[in-house]
Image 1 (cartoon, rainbow over the protein chains, first blue to last red):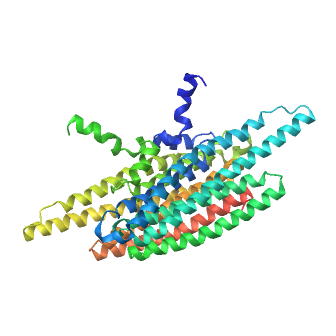
Image 2: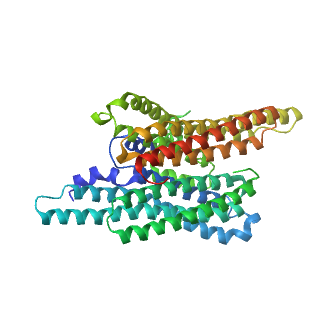
Length: 224
Length: 224
């Protein structure tokens, strides 16, 4: 890659480096990337951050000494999830680019048509995988928010509740994107297998969200 | 304010100018701002952007000529909501700063104590108002997402669905912040009035979210 190319491509390629206002402008525009998959991943990243914040306000205080080591482990996990979810916003763009690249493949001969269709199917499977991983990571954020909501500093547990709301919404949005990609995939065994995985993930997410919101609600003394 | 102070304060004062990665780092840290209120407002801003994007992919095409002027009106509204929600992330920080400023007020004499408590109550009412406005704006995003989901370009209506998920989560998070602020407010008439407003808003939001997701689901042919 030329230096010029790298320099001009850098800001758009790394979502984390974009100013928030500029990102929302790009999201509003008539371009497919960034799109809903990226917005979902960023909401998930903000949710992971909020769980980290509740932990930061809890550890290092005598009152919470008993849960300190447990909470520190959760913070290490949510910090890793924050970084991974920011990366998934980029991966979503790349997966979309890979799909659209196949539209430009030659389709004159039967062989070319076959190769084009095959490449498109491979790219679509890749594009279905990214939002599935985003959804899995959002579930992990929710699962960490539950003990943090139960044991964290009550003064900031509302931020753990916000994390649960945002991560659950991001998960549902990501799963909608998985399902839309699955509609275009012709490999029936693949679709069946992934549909089953989606159903399992959704069931776990519903339960985890309920439990995490209950934990935050009890700590806060406010209905959620 | 000194030039030095202004220069160093500028990036943190305007959330829209912060790089996304940096914002999530600040969110993770042991500082109350930015917090869950800001994260909710930004998710709402992303949701508004996604509705604008679906409209951008729809207008200007013969196929959608009949709905063009209606959709252009929705786009003007969602663009205004995007900007307002970005501003609400800043307003959330300012409201918090106003509350904490009252903690530092003198409390030696009875008069001082009384003045401090009165100032704190005023600041808390202000702090309850900001997330309520955020929630109202998120509801407006959801209400715009419904006709856009029904009449927009089906290729991108999944982004309208993502908008609904994110805006609804942001609304619930914002309302949790309103309720937590209400707990500290001693003016019973104020609390009663606002609790009733919150209940009305939540009922409208539940209904609007259902209707908007149904519209998107019908257009996409995918369960949401």
